[in-house]
Length: 239
Image (cartoon, rainbow, N blue to C red; front, side, top):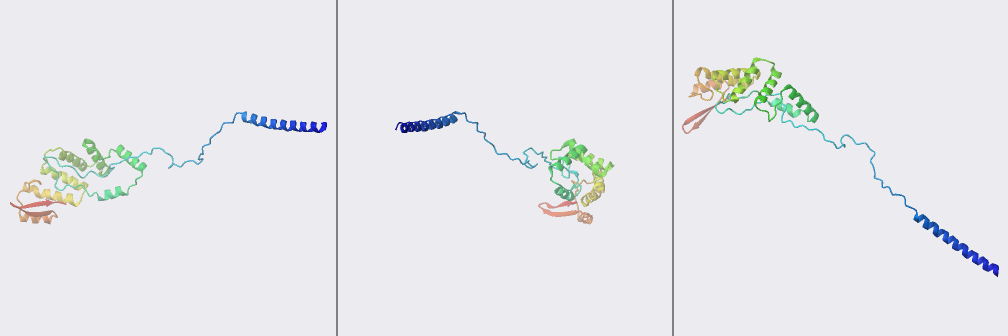
């Protein structure tokens, strides 16, 4: 009987000791400091292409880099340019500009080359800078010939309100025909020479009769007669 009691007591003590050991082990583990948590950010290991790299790309805005001289000007206050002034047909040049590459780097190189050659003309180019650029363009196109300097000399005069005689206009137009032998320039020169023996200026041709109108038309010059309150007016065009 005593042996049975001893066994029961021993079993109870053993179970209690096991429970105590389990609880103590758990508490000890909970009391240990926890390892720091590392938050991982997903990373893209791919190398970005040139298009994906966020960096500024130089861009250059060209008003116009042209190898053609400017064809439109404002008339001087008291002195107009030759009738229907037209250096040359720019259609071919405009088509070339439309077909040019829009690559910014190519435009930049073209801009730098024009600046170095002194031929750059933009919407803001004016005064001597404009005249020099026009002259440099013409020198590149035609070489250093007298007609280039004649045209540029008279371009300055036309813009300076300086008086221009018919003789000077003929000289100017002859230089233009040498450089730009288009129909308009040729007819304008013919018209000036037609006026010369009559002593009239292009701005004031005086009275013109039917015989003169017929003669002008035979030269390819447009002559339009319009009725007015005081009679009729005559409009002459070399275009």
